[in-house]
Image: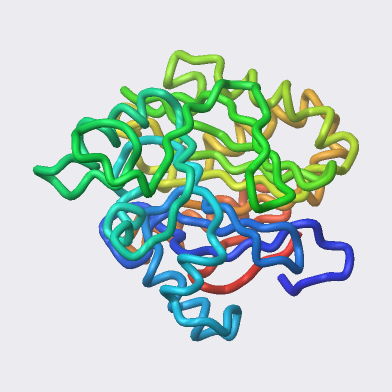
Length: 299
């Protein structure tokens, strides 16, 4: 997708996959369009993804300067390593920033990651000495926070990811919205109502045409048994959830909605299968987008 004159958001995927490729794990830089005031939604991969974006002429600074100057804050959906390991590895060269996450995720940062036995404590809480580079901010569901250094506001919603609470981030730029979901299973399998509550919350935004993009995971093809989804979606389950949203908005409002498919797990044969299965099931006319590492998007 090319950048357009009416775009509200610039999105630079730093990592798009789930699974084993440590150079390409979930991380998305998001800024008001035509600015460099980014937040990073998850941070599984940072440096390798920034370098890919530089190779594509997205940025004209060295990777370490993009990290230091352009990323203003991190929003981490949950505590699994494939969503935050890039933040930890790059922390010695980073600048002072806020890490926003749910309470459980912050506790894992304090007790497992930024400790002096596993790394150094670059944060403002936890084991001493505290290096105070990062400031932890526990997110309160449904409460919108203003992100310093940007024009963005972010509201959070809980998601169910097997044994963990994950998070959805609703990013607001002057009344235009982008919704990013961390890892999530379907309500029916997770015995949850979190997605139902999220769809109800965003339905008015979808109906008004102000939701510019929905970023949601599809980790496995339909052949994956429900009992081994481990809090993830398949094409069938994604489309079932989209039907729930469509029932709340009406089918006309959801037709053409930009749906960015994230967290697809390797191997490549699975990725190809997932694309085929989503295409075959897309009777609602969603605009399905498969992000590429380092390739910018605008919405």
